[in-house]
Amino acid sequence: MKLYSFFRSGTSHRLRIALNLKGVDYTYVPVDLRREEHLGDAYRALNPQGLVPALAVEGRVLTQTPAILEWLEERFPSPPLLPADADARARVRTLAAIVGCDIHPVNNRRILESLRSDFGADEAAVNRWCSRWIGEGFDAIEALLAADPHRGDYCVGDTPTLAEVYLVPQVESARRFGVDLSRWPRITAVDAACQRLATFRCAAPALQPDAA
Ligand SMILES: N[C@@H](CCC(=O)N[C@@H](CS)C(=O)NCC(=O)O)C(=O)O
Image (cartoon, rainbow, N blue to C red):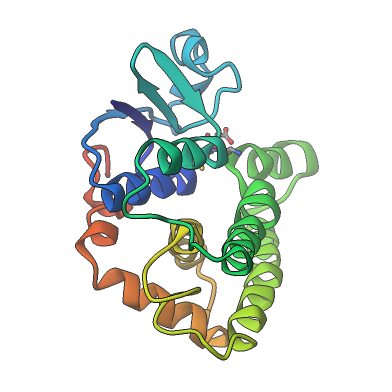
């Protein structure tokens, strides 16, 4: 398997965590977003959307992390990243969707570039934008975590699930944008629990071959 990844990309980070949790080996292929390699013909031939990550496997290329994560779960069911119980699965998917559908898309590089070039936003305004949408999403996640009386160290159940696969990269990104995380003690505790696991630590942006 080849993972086309950028070290600082939150969606690439999701896949690195999931592949590590599943124990699946892969070759890391860097795609430099700073040099816009993802917009060139060579990468677009792999992913016409011009977004990382992409996973090349057995002669085909998978794109879109929700689809790739489901594929991984189906092809490598052990250890599971979704709980057995339907209600718990729904909770995991809710938490993952808050990050994947409502926080990450509006803070993506191309959106921030458009704020700068089409709307004249300076870096302070861009940071306010990111903080706002991260804050709204994290407030909701924190409330959902607080409302679950059976929760342990992780978001749902006693082992990491897709909820952490989405959440930990978003926490990393929040730190990068200078967001004060002290407002969300449950989220930071889940992140700390994940950082105790080598599978999460090895997926960190700073440890990737293209980290600079
Ligand atoms: N929904 C896509 C989003 C992928 C995505 O937005 N990737 C970002 C990096 S985290 C990207 O390639 N951005 C390039 C850009 O915005 O120009 C997924 O989950 O795979």
